[in-house]
Length: 191
Image 1 (cartoon, helix red, strand yellow):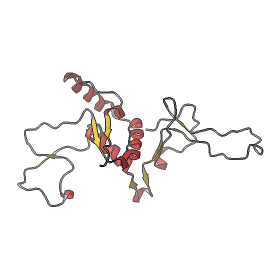
Image 2: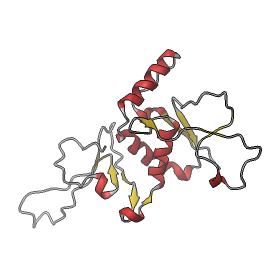
Image 3: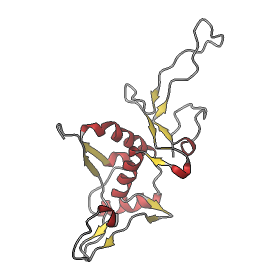
Image 4: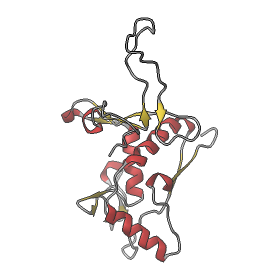
């Protein structure tokens, strides 16, 4: 669910059609010489919605290619993973990934043979995180900035947010309302 910039006129096609999400308004594409422009239109810089002092405008590609051959971007997949870690990714109100019991003696030789989420202890209660912290090489900083743009505009089902708020409050650990405020990063040098 994209957040339109204040005062926007809907000049951009929806993200569901283009695969591009932004955190503000880009520089107008109308370019002409000031001497030849009878409308008096002037150049305007891009602007970040909700900027603090100075803007950091970002356009995020969520996918490329036609729908039947769609290639999902790293930023989109990392956003989905953050939502899974936080227990906020739902389909018709139900969690998308649930733990699969693992009772085999050995693990498979290939990662792809494992379920996405494994429950090793049959007595363990499934849980999701109230906050996440990712430790990544610095080369992922632009991707994670894009992830934050996506998470800042994602629509999370109200029931999922209510469940987290109630559970965390009962444990004395209130969490931020905004999903993006529940994610943090460490980019150690040399990693």
